[in-house]
Image (cartoon, rainbow, N blue to C red; front, side, top):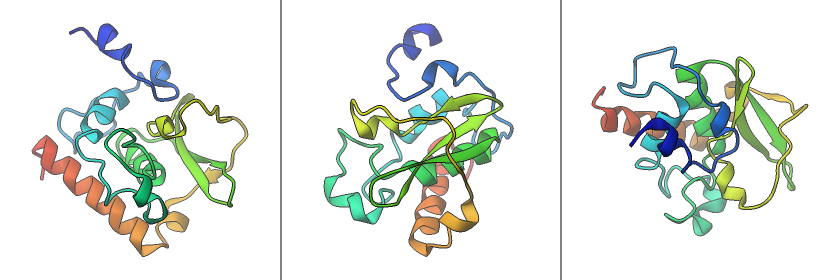
Length: 152
């Protein structure tokens, strides 16, 4: 299947603009955000979901509660910045901007809701990972991805 046909299957925000190259070879075979998304569909799980959302997580909604740990993993691999959309309740939904390419690997969790990806505050891992459970989920996600890609 060609990448063009394969790309038509993606539903996350900005998939058409996610045509950037990895800045690291730490995760073998992860060359683009589309490659990362494909790999993460085998890694995202109830444990990597934010604890407050675990009761709602399912294989049909794998991206639920995965935003910050995924966005910072994207930053590790592709660079760029992480931004956050303020959500009801005061939490931020994280997404990526890499050299002007804005995409959100976990946007599918919102179904038909349209988020605004403009003029949002930058997010920092030091703030997010001050919560130990979030840092541990991020580390688990990284390790499972390395195992999947045979780079561990």
